[in-house]
Structure formats: structure tokens, C-alpha cells
Image (cartoon, rainbow, N blue to C red; front, side, top):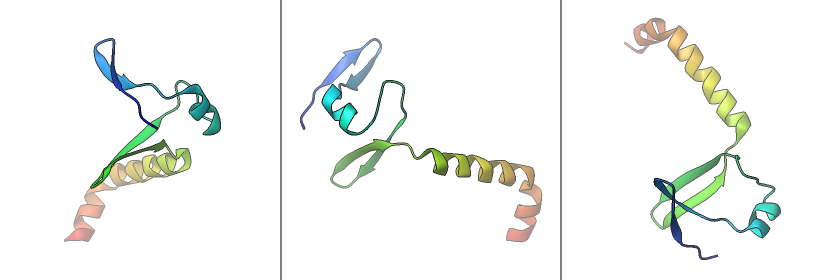
Length: 73
């Protein structure tokens, strides 16, 4: 699919056709992850379960920062 980068307010963005959104079960407000690789970009829905796990891991690392630093020595 080809699309054009358009001016949207003070930003730029791309329009995803409604048929594509429907096929991928996406709607306005859903979070997408933009992944850059050597061939270009991949755009995919954010994995909510993974994001929750990462948030929990960050919380543990913040809580035990000093202990983790001592263990790393």
C-alpha cells in the first residue's frame, strides 16, 4: 500500500485506509509501534501484555536499584 505523508496540525502523519484498519481490527486512538530496520519501517499494534510486563520490570528495577547495582559489581 502506498500513502503520502500529510500535514496534520503542527505535525505530519500518514492516513491509514479504513479498510486496512478494519482488517487489522484497529481504531482511532490505538497505539502503534514504529520499528526501523535496514529496509525501512514496520508499523504494528503495541502488544499491551508486553508493555505491562515492561512497566512492572521498570518498577522493580527502580525499587531495587541500589541492590541491583551492588549485584552487578
